[in-house]
Length: 384
Ligand code: ADP
Image 1 (cartoon, rainbow, N blue to C red):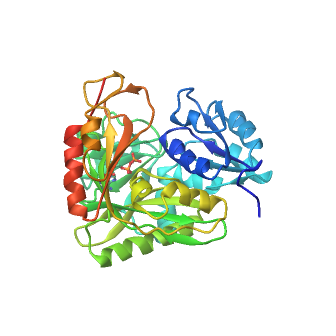
Image 2 (cartoon, rainbow, N blue to C red):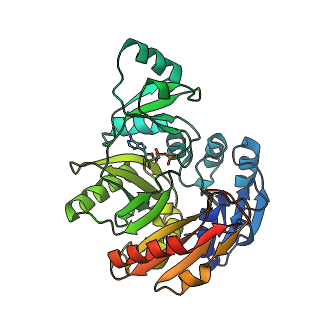
Image 3 (tube, protein in one colour):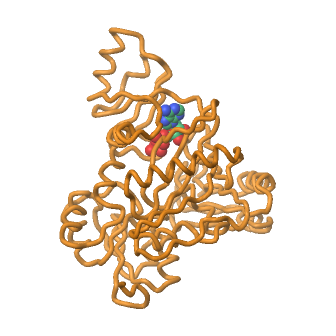
């Protein structure tokens, strides 16, 4: 067994955003040496790693050369050069999640086809070479609106996703391979984070519930536990575990679901890394998702996924109408509320809807936590 602690062992992380920064809090806790690659010299993770490299995550040579100098390589963002990871893996670098998992997840078409192949329940879908082919079909027969168009590649936080209500909405969609799915009139959006270690040990976190901002298409609140029946929670956890096994993922797999009005659970999409829906775990879980990710990719025993208390996480995004040097107005007021911990990611510039931080509210009672979360949301302002 490798000695990871206070040693020459080096963990490489592709991406230096907030997820990287929070992962590094755990490598610091264990004195694990780290090296981070990110295109921005201002990346939030730059201060917490041992070595910071500025460079492109999608350029073959940059990723390959970076990976040659580490023992285990992981990611905090999916959009990285997979060919370089394949070469590194072939040369003996341990890459988690695997390039194979990443290549499926990077592409929404491949992801949907994978669910079909594995019998994982997901919304019905069709694949089109380009929106133009869809437009041609619309001329021939009536499409079953509403539908959801998703570009195969490089959609992020609602970009590359559009609800189609009629033929007019087919105009102006970007060219390229896409998937068109039935619109699911869901009751709730749920998520489960699964940890699967390089030894095959596997564990699921409790089901969380996500509440979305109506305009920005970003998660506004994450509640743990979700306010659902035990039956549905068990179903979602079982499906998340099965999905992680199908991907043979090593590390974390965040599985996002739609809960239908009929109580059916459908997989929407997955992310093979720490996830926004698991941030609550830093304050509320026995083992937070970032520590768990390290345990999983290093083949250490997994920690307990149980919660110590209920929690609500509020995303702090830049307020509309403000661009420039960020100010967290009224942060002192929210810190005076019970069980409230802010996390500031370290981005100097705010922009409308940019993810700048989050706030976790822990409480014995989920409903009370939700009430305090609303007060937090009303009080704090991310402005310039
Ligand atoms: P992204 O990768 O940008 O997060 P998602 O595929 O998760 O894209 O879609 C973003 C959001 O759009 C979802 O969280 C959900 O609210 C909505 N959405 C996506 N697909 C569907 C669908 N088939 N039916 C209804 N809403 C959907």
